[in-house]
Length: 260
Image 1: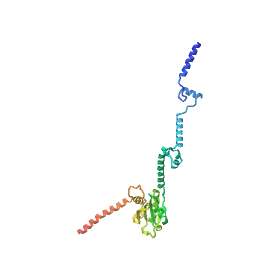
Image 2: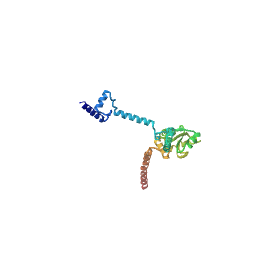
Image 3: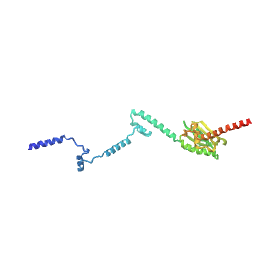
Image 4: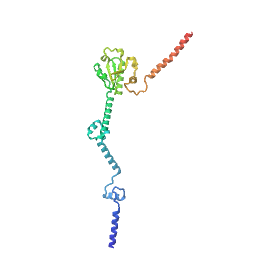
């Protein structure tokens, strides 16, 4: 009897040893009982694990930055941490970022109309800078069309901040400049005149719209307009059509008078 008990106990021991270890996180009834008794800790939910992993990833991304994501200042601060293989790539990205920075600075350099005098002409127009377009309006107070163009200049300067819009009283830049030539617009590129618009007839009088002025300047190359066609073209087409319709009628009347 005693030997049987030993053999039975040994058999039970063998069974316990052969049983695989229990997973405390396994979703079983036995583990649930142990958790309720406080023997096992509460099971960590899957969402909590995912949230923890995501938090670790965000923290890692905020601490570790590759040179592709760095600004110019960060590239300079971390220059000593790059190995030889990265130096060429870092230099390429530095040049690229520098070019982007210069382009952004140039694009947003202006945005307002600058008023100058004759003394500032050379500095602001002739020596404006490489690849820079300058649009100069010579005007005089008391001329309505000049005032209208100044209004259009303010709007166009905001729309095209990479172009330098300037206005100046005519006689301060060109002594004895005749009022009959006003308004006058000169378009410059690197100090050279690329286009000029002189006198009220060129602008069509007080009916000149901002879009029409934008179109004129775009034809000189100073600005890149989003207008697809000349906004004044329909008016011009109507005038031409009316002239063409009137010409045959005159010829018919002339031939009739000759026949008489």
